[in-house]
Length: 332
Ligand SMILES: *Cc1c(COP(=O)(O)O)cnc(C)c1O
Ligand code: SF4
Image 1 (cartoon, protein in one colour):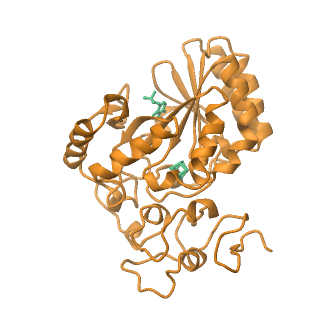
Image 2 (tube, rainbow, N blue to C red):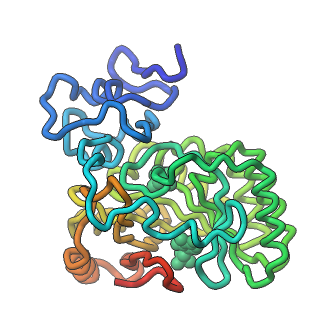
Image 3 (cartoon, rainbow, N blue to C red):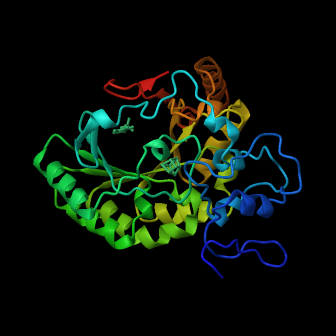
């Protein structure tokens, strides 16, 4: 079978195989191809569709408004410009202190450790950065040297792309180099892989266990809806936890996906059931082509008030927005 071919058993259930990379295959898999679409679908979007079979398997069949599908299906709205939505809304370009190293906040630097993700989320600013960051391992090593020389950097955040989409040997190499930097006491990994394609975390468990032994290691996953935490995800989170790392989650507030008190409360509960603390609920970054995902801040604040009524304090994420030039994510 070709790598990109959709793998489905005769009973329609997914087989282990490559990700889905065309809208046609995704709609076929979800039994949507013969149903009239209530919105325009882009067949050839600027950043191609990419979704692991395991994530697609958590979508409801025959439902155009499935909250997971809405996050990854390229839609016509992407083509419409909107005032205030730009290519680099959070001014990453201005925050680069070395190739693939961003510093915006005190004591923390963010290393763009890879340019790949396990899937393409349509609301994400990373996929809009233009040319993919073709950083070589030399650039990463140069960034690590820079971190080693700057004793004010107590925490290094591995981000990307998705650092867990690196080949395991590369991540391990980065981990070993970080472990040699005495002032770097915390290593944080921002990843959607445990949610996107949970079984693929196994290749990195030894590295995360190593980091958890020699440093404080925090793994921040990214889930927006309770339904993302089905399938093999809870088991993968358990395996991650058993490495000794701390698990947090960040979400983005997304219209028609999680802009509902009840949905957000269920997400928090499901996260905690898997040992993951809710960390941030992000107001959408106003990136070009993502305006149709935006929920207003007023609505966001109402939702937060609702969450505080429903949940214990530790289950309520911090509702924040990133404002370029500010010294921290801004609480809303
Ligand atoms: C969001 C972000 C961080 C992390 O911020 P925390 O509030 O510590 O989670 C660090 N660096 C950059 C460049 C960021 O965008
Ligand atoms: S960086 Fe995260 S949110 Fe953005 S496309 Fe990759 S996996 Fe999705």
